Amino acid sequence: MFETYFSEMKTICIKYIAISCILFANINNSLFAQPISYKINTKETLQRIDGFGASDAWTIQFVGLWPKAKTEKIADWLFSTKNDEHGNPKGIGLSIWRFNLGAGSAEQGDSSHIDFGTRTDCFLQKDGSYNWNKQAGQRNFLHLAKERGVKIFLAFLNSPPVYFTQNGWATNTGRNGTYNLRSDAYPHFVSFLANIVEGLNKHDGIHFSYLSPVNEPDGTWNWLGSNQEGSPATNKEIAKLTRMLGNEFHKRGIKTKILIDESSNYWSLYKPSDQQRGRAIQAFFNKNNTDTYIGDVPNVPRMVVGHSYWTNTPLDSLRQIRRTLNDSLNKYKVGFWQTELCIMSNDKEIGCGEVFDRTMKTALYVGRVIHHDLVYAHASSWQWWRAIVGNYKDGLLSEQDDSHGKDDNVVDSKLLWLFGNYSRFVRPGATRLATTVFDQANRIIPEGDTDPHGLMCTAFRNKNKELIFVVLNYADTDKQIVFNANTNRKWTPYITSDKEKDNLRKLENINEGSIFTIPARSAVTFVSKQR
Image (cartoon, rainbow, N blue to C red):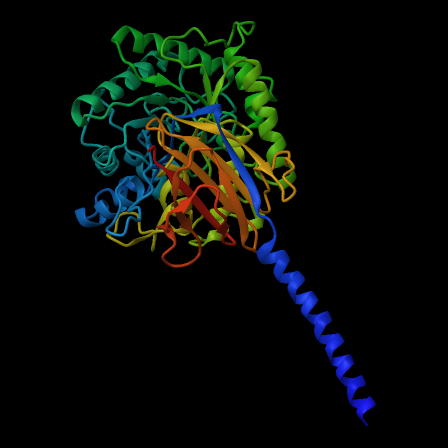
C-alpha cells in the first residue's frame, strides 16, 4: 500500500517539476530575457529634417467656413504644439501646410468634367482681374496654421488656370500626355504664379516658402482625364516653365523656392517613365542634359519632391526601392522631400483605400512607410495627402457625412496621432541621428533599426538640443528595449495605441538605460530635453 502511495507521489512530483520547468522557461523567455539594446549615435548625423505636413486639398474649402469653435478645434488637432493640463499634446504640431492653389473648375460648375467635391476656385477672373476673396475656407486655415506657429507654407497646383489650358478645362480630358497649357500662355501662367505669391503675402500676410507648379506629371491618370484637376507634362515642358518662373521670381525679388516635379511614384525619379518623362533627378540636375537642366535657375533648390504611391507593397520591395532612389540622389547630390501619400488600391494589407479607418491598422501601416522613407530614402520632409476626408483612407481626420459644405462633425484617428509621434516632436531643422542595435548577446544587428514586422526606430536631435527617439512596434506582442545616448538624461515617453486615451499620451519619465516595454501595435516617442 505504502509502496503504491509513494510511487504515485513520485510520479506526481516528477510531473510537477516538469511543468514547473516549462513554465519557468516560458516566463524566463518572456520576462527575464535580455531586451534589444539601441545606441543613439549622437555624433553620427544623417539628413536634416525640414518638417512634417499635410495638405488642405478639397475638404478644407468647405470646413474652413464652419463655425469658429469647430475650425479652432480642428486647427488645434493639426497644428497645436501646446499640451493639456496633464501634459498630453493637444495636437500633432504639423510644421508644413500645403495650400492647393485652385485652377477655376468650381466656377465652371458641372461643365468642368470634375466632381463637385474636388473642384477649386481661382483667384484669377476671366477678365484678367483678381478676386482675393476666393478660396476663403482654405485661406482661413492658412491663418489658423500661422497662429499656431506654422512657418512653412507650400502652394501647389494640379492644373494651370482654366483660362490658360489647351482644352479649356482643369482636367486633361480628351488630350494626350503633354502639358495642358497653351504654348502662348506660358508667360501669363508665370505672371499668375508670381502675382499669387505676392498677393497672398499682401492680403493675408502668408509668405509661401515654396511653390510646386506641376503635380504628378508622370501620372497616367492625368493623361486620360478624370474627376479631379490634373495635367501630365514632359520633362522639357517642366524645365521650360521652371526657367521662366525662376527668372520672374528673381526679377521681382520673390524669395519663394520652386519645387519640382512631384512625381507620382519613386520610380519616375530615377528611371524612365517614357521617352519624354521620368528620371527626374538626372533630367533636371545633370548638366549634360542641356534641354532639361535647371540646376542654375534662380530660386530652384537642388532638390526633387515626389510621392510614395504604389511603392509600399509588396513589403520586400519597400526597402530596396528607397535604397535605389537614395543612390541616385547621392550620385547627383540632390535632396529629397516626400510630399504626398494616402492609401491606394494596392495597399491590400489594410484593405485598400475604401472606408475611413480610425484604428492602428492604418496608422502603423503608414508609420512603416514614414520610417522607410526617412531611413532608406533619406527624406528631409514627409507629408501626408489630405488633412480631412469623408469615408476614405486618405485623411488624418474625417468629416462624418462628407457633406461638402454642411456644418458637420469631424473625428480624429490613430493615424493622426501616430503621425504626431514624428511631427509633434521632430521640429524643423532637426537632424536625424544614426542608431546601432545590439541583440541579447551584445552583438550588432545589421539594420536592426528596421524590422517591418516588429520594431522600427529612428533618432533625432532638434535645434534646441532635445533628443527624440521614435519606436514603432508593428508586432502583435509586446517588445522590451533599452536605449542609450550616453547623456544620462531622463526621457519622457508619449504613446499612441488603440487604447482610447492613447493619443500621444504622456507616460512617466524613465531613466536612460532602463528597460521599457513597447506595447504591441503601438508607437512610442521618447523626448529628452537638454540639461
